[in-house]
Image (cartoon, rainbow, N blue to C red):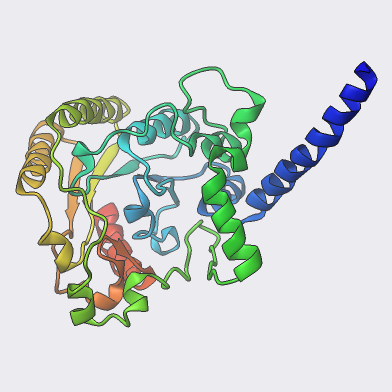
Length: 312
């Protein structure tokens, strides 16, 4: 009876395990920025002078290929300052040539919750960067990419292997040079159609408790960078004009007050502010209201390159 029960269990669980293994294999085979970064890091042997941290906004805005200094862009979608700080503390001791760290300070950065120790991308950081962001000892399961977010990876697997409708091409610096097929492209970059979009992603809910927590950690990160004698460039990234009309004035004012205070207190900190530029950045430079496409990235990266080469 016991042997029969074990046989039934094996017959039930083996297909399930095989299914998860197949999904894990397919997830690991997907072209992703973080996997491209892993290969870039191996090729460069940690000889980076500039490190970029932040969310998808700065990830899509900077192509390290167009910078004169060897640059690693560790920014990623939904990545917040607490994860940035964890990555920084792990990478900084290994990057012996590091001179400059670039940090994103977008409109509502200080009033959105931190990622926390249960952020699903922690599995990716552990798998590809060998960085533990879980704030605890890790186990075998923590490195399983598919299980970190089955819904997300199932959608990506469907798009890539079944629908075959994704256009992705990462260069040797981990940047997606074909990332043009966004919301604005679907609307043919028509200004009137874009203006009439019923909604888009933007945080308009103020939260003073989160603001207090986030700013405290932000200053801790700046203190760490100051102690390491590293130059810091804060970036306010370009946003399309319809984005600005939806901003909450209080959220914006508090963010700018923090930046003003930082520039006064820290001698090693600079600011690159192209957030409201409507002359250099036109509608065809955007993927959506808050992200540049590779054409816009070429312009932003050029400005960043000038600032990186500036002696003051």
